[in-house]
Length: 536
Ligand code: C2O
Image (cartoon, rainbow, N blue to C red; front, side, top):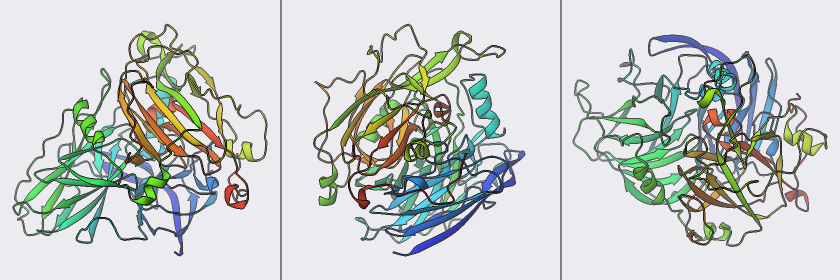
């Protein structure tokens, strides 16, 4: 292990996509931003300097941040944002984890253009073989409007639909969009090899299927954790998820499209329907060969998605087995879903019945504080948050059938407190107050085991849990009109954000945070913040 230092400069960049030129916020003038390569065990120092016009912070999505919560990055949760002209040195060690993750802006909607991959090479050899050739595939979105303005409108006008103008692969929309035939990512391969594709869904608001025409994908890793390998033609990634697949270039010499198309679990929510395509090209194929099109699942194909996620199993080497919590110290039941709230005066609200959309966890819609929660907690600053986040929903009801009359959540900044080393179980229950929807829930600071999931209301008596080889991830798509149960050991002190990775839902308040208390001794205690931690 070594120390690796990176310089990241947040700066404007003028870019043209789908016949539209605009100035975006970029990292180092690149879109997508640079890939951060490291080895397991390395210490990482990233000096982020903000030369853009917005406040920003950077999150290292999926990095455990053992005893380094100050480097996690979500604005107003673990740090105040880095203001224009300021810098902050993110300092963390990659402890006992490897694989494909990503970094992204974690302040307002800036991650729409400020993101890049993280590739961590494992200390031990891979539990699979390939030809030592690998490629990063970042799925994203392109918005003609400024993403900050899209957010403002979603928040102030309660506009439900926030529709991306294109999906992208490594920043390029591909030939199905106007003016984009040359804006198509090209991956050249040699015949009869096995490639590792590191695929990340960095989109703001779109769950995506990914497939390659005529080729089989072997899933070997999800969110930086190995899986029992299995073959599939299509994978599903919610925003915040990553998947490593092996692909054999074993088809007739030719050109094939690979692409991403939307999975939309909710009814009546408009979305971008045109897939993004890239070219998977055998290097000896004539460039004039028309590429073969893949077949995409239907956008509402919940059967495919259920089958896919149901096939994921962790590779239960002995190391894994030790870490699956077999018992529970802290049992939580959280409803996740949308609601409606009355419209502020002088605004036109565009939600149902002239109301505003809102969203909540256990009926509490998060209000971000003005001082970061971790600072407030560490320095005992009062009146920033309360410690009364409920362990159960306040008013139990039939979550997926008969909604109660009151659809308006409470607004607040409430934290749930977890003693060090507790085995935590959270049952995440989707609600159908304003229509059911798959919510990709991301937990900072931990990967968790998905011990069970199903449709309808969670029922402790009949739920079947897998405590032998459950998949481990950092982002779980809670099934539409269903539930998922996750478990993790709270062995890392700090304040940890948990939220829907559909950015519009976070904006509406589908978020909460945990305090994980210190244990005993310096290896269980959060050290003081670095001197350059941004102040609000
Ligand atoms: Cu990838 Cu809190 O986010």
